[in-house]
Picture 1 (spheres, helix red, strand yellow):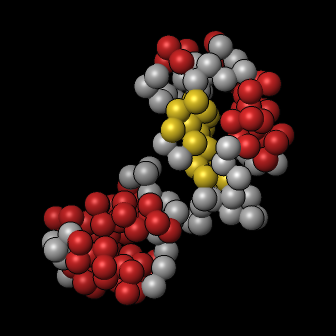
Picture 2 (tube, one colour):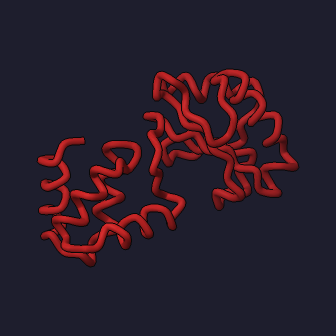
Length: 150
C-alpha cells in the first residue's frame, strides 16, 4: 500500500488522531494486514507516537502485523459448534487448504483461524469467511463453502 492511499484514508477521517483505530481498520481492510511502513506513515501524519500506534495494532486481535490472505477463514470452536462437529470441519478445511490455524497459504488466498465463539450458536457448526457466516456446515458442505471464495 503506497503513501498516497494511506494519506487518502487519513484524510477521509480528517486527520484526527481520535480516528486512529478506524484508520488502521480501513488500511487493513484494503491491504489485509498492517505493514510497519504504513503504521509509521499513520503515526507521522496523525502526530501520534509510533509506539502508541504499534501498541494499538498489536493489542487488538482484529489487526494483523503479518501478511494475510484475501479470504479470512474463521472456524468456530465454541461449545455449541464443537458438539456439532466443528473439529471435523476444521480438519476438512485443513485438508482442503493445507493450512493449520494461524497460517496463510503461499498464494495469499486464505488465512485460517479458529475462534472461541462467533455469536451464532444456533447455526453451529459455523465457518465465517470475510465476515459472512455459513451455518450448519457439514463436512460434505465444506468444500462448496470454500469454493465460493476462490
